[in-house]
Structure formats: structure tokens, C-alpha cells
Length: 269
Ligand SMILES: C[S@@+](CC[C@H](N)C(=O)[O-])C[C@H]1O[C@@H](n2cnc3c(N)ncnc32)[C@H](O)[C@@H]1O
Image 1 (cartoon, rainbow, N blue to C red):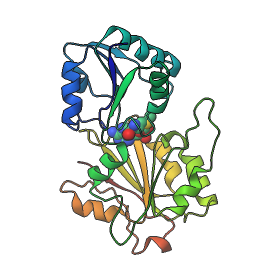
Image 2 (image 1 turned 60 degrees about the horizontal axis):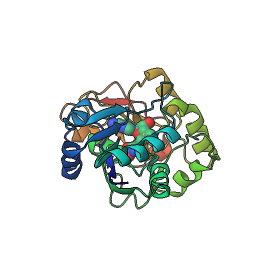
Image 3 (image 1 turned 60 degrees about the vertical axis):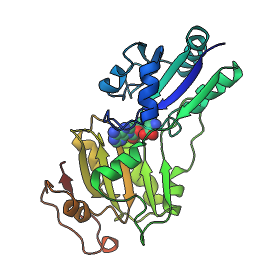
């Protein structure tokens, strides 16, 4: 084996939200295996590389993980610099560990290059800190999605135990998420911000509460979206922070703990 495999985070979507290290590796890469959510301009940085799509998005064609693992090992035997380009950060809900295990088993050198994860991009998009001082000291990053061969776990309890949470890959099961959080003891009136396409020009935000979460099914969110949950995600804070807020007839509660549903505000950026 002569090559090295770089597991590289491409960030949340915007092509300029990429680390310098990632950009330089792409420019030097011989071959790049990239995920579905990676921006075409980011892939284009690998101008001299063979570029291979191996991404998966819900309900669409995907390349089986074991096959990807094998391709990485095979590529390292034939090329000096192999880049495995993943959306966000490779180590957060990115299946990097399976690939690392396969590379280690085959004796292939590897390095991980971090990227900006979706929850941080979403928080930046709306101008509300995930760890707002005085309100939040703990944040739980979860996904209710259960992959093949994985056992389901009680993810909702970790959000109840934390001050705030970010749910990845959850939009398709908003009903079940709301029910699980309420059953686990989270107040139905807890504010929620659903951020779609964070960091991209077509970013959208929907503010509601846990009780109102099932309604996002009606909004049809075709892009990737993260669900942020916590007392700090009141719409009025983001509306104040956004110069071009589009407010859609929502009423604001004075105190979220006394409200059952503060309605909805859309913020466009
Ligand atoms: C397979 S996970 C990969 C997460 C990635 N490794 C990361 O660190 O962001 C894909 C999920 O990330 C979230 N996501 C990815 N890009 C996003 C974006 N630009 N805006 C909002 N959510 C995003 C969505 O919840 C999506 O279903």
C-alpha cells in the first residue's frame, strides 16, 4: 500500500465554508469519492482527480457502505492521495468510523480533516448560539435514524437531559420525534427552529414548537434540514438579528413555558 486516504469534511454546503487544508488536499488529490450533499464547486477544486459520486440521500440511489470501504482500500493501492469527501464533519453522523475500521484492517494510512457540521451552520444561519450564555450549558446532537444493523436507542432522553438539542436526519419523522420528546418529558411548548439548506442561498427557517413539529411535513423540505430545540430558539431573537426577516403572521409568546404553540415565523436570508 502506498497511498494515504484523507477523510475530509466538506462543510454544510457553501463551497467557501471549507478548511484550507481540505481545499489544498482536493487540489492535490488523485481520486475523490464524494457524498451527495457536497457542493459542485467544492468537487471542482479537485480538478486533476478522478471524481466519483458515492453519496446517499433518503429514497435515492446509494452505494453500499461496504462497497465504499473496499473502493477506498483499493484506491489507496493505486493512488498517492485519495480523498473521501463527506458533507459537514466526517466524524458526526458521517459513517467515518466504518471507513476508518476498513482502512486500519487493510493497513492503509489515513487522516481525518474536520469540517463545519450542520448544527453549527444552522446556528450561524439564524444568529442564535447553540450554547447561549445563561440559558444553555449542554447540547445534545442526536439522530433518530436507525441504520441497517443498528439497535434503536432512546435518543429523546438525551435531549430532555440537555438544555438544547440538534436533530440530524429527522425531518421525515417529525411526528414521531415530537411524540418521543413529549413522552420523554420535554415541554410541548419548547421552541424549535428547523433550518433547511443552512449556509446556502436557498436556506429556510421555520420557527415553531415541539407540539407544532409535525406540521413541517406540510412544508415539504426537499433540502437537508436540522431541527434545533431549546429555549433560545425563539423566533423574535432571530427576527431581530436578521436584516431581511420575512415574518409570516406568527404571534410571539412572552414566555414559552406558558404557550402551547407560538405559531410560526419564517426568516429569509
Ligand atoms: C448523514 S447526515 C451528515 C451530517 C454531516 N456529517 C454533518 O456533520 O453535518 C445528513 C444530515 O445532516 C443535516 N444537514 C446536512 N447539511 C445540512 C444543511 N446544509 N442544512 C441543514 N441540515 C443539514 C441534515 O439533518 C441531514 O439529514
